[in-house]
Length: 562
Image (cartoon, rainbow, N blue to C red; front, side, top):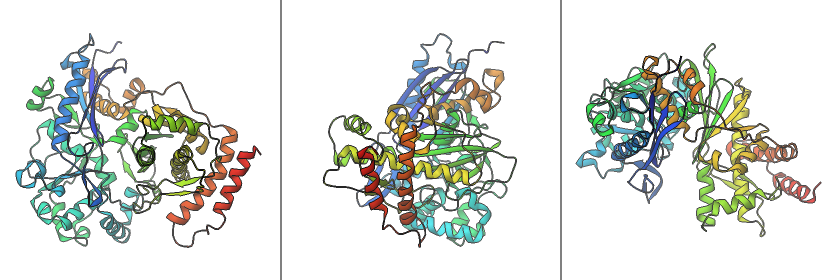
């Protein structure tokens, strides 16, 4: 039986811009696509010259970018003969996380009020804001001592990037803002409230994806108990009662599109809007994740996503970003790990130490002419801290093996290799704890545009690297959940798995590991691990006395062709 013409709208809110994707649910083709940059700050980020840890956003940018991108994608979709606004069966949302913002009782961000418009603490606290590193350590110690069954939710260590750390930091650094906030919303919950016209934070359906991975929301016990939060600050215990007791997976409906936003977008009022989720998690759905598939979302940072059957107890994997029920695919454990600097790391090198036009392209070409180990360099990829498996944002980068002849391209390749080594550390940790990786699917701009990086990842990990067919997997994941809440009776789908069968796939090109490169990288990885464990691990790790000498010996062997 032929499916009726139907479409879904996916909305992807990234670090610097928002993207909208209209997907044909019969063919999986993109019917319309548009992007809109956030107008405030530097590339959409509000920075503080005096504190490099600050990264905030103006919540007004979300509405502006949403309207611009969604209208652009829907306008493009009208070129399709079968498209009609009433055939958009649902809308799905993904955003960065944890990006919480303080709001009043109606869900209005404090930053939109005149008295707080210029107050940094009243803005959205972007995921990459690290001002709360001290608070994160306090929370980690409290959870280990008082709530050990919550530890798997955060991989054993709570992050300065996450919900409670940032709120506690606001309480201490900006008490006036904290006192004025009736509640705090994750960005995905705020966008859902915006689209559905929800004006009561008590009735808003909160995202289980964001709640579980970022706010310590336990599947049976909910948010951390008030008496435990009181040990951090009594004000947090009071705030807890103004947050939420239940969270919802992304296949649930947040509500219908409001009349105001229906007029803005040209869609029918009441169009189902799915509960929002985290961009990387929905990107994994758009890449076709299933048990045994590791999805790597490669952009400014890297997020590693897996799902596992819920037949057993919650997996306890120290050093990952968390394990949460249904956070990626409902009915499966969702596992998240990642690295906070990949594209950012390469951009840093190009911006500060090259700066010429087309630097990425030129350095990539030059780096591709080098053999593994030829430069005699090894680096630690911690220029923005370490997310997994060490979970320490205070860690910094390192480059070892430089000489007066070291070239910019050699460093560029060493930085790519460092991110690949970090990816291998994560894979090994997962498999050590029983979560097996049978295939790796990559997505994001870097995966599509940099074949050298993909080949190095294949050689370092010894695994084939596949690339998702869609260039917009996060927005596609949003569209998939939009199609699910739209339901099969309107041309949508009954489940995420059913939607993935039609809408997801991988490209023909697969990057396969080369035997000689794998052997060299195994030796180089051993040196990386010694640096990794010494500088990032507990006291008493191996001495560094032979690392540089071993690195030189490996370089000389490669150069001699031995």
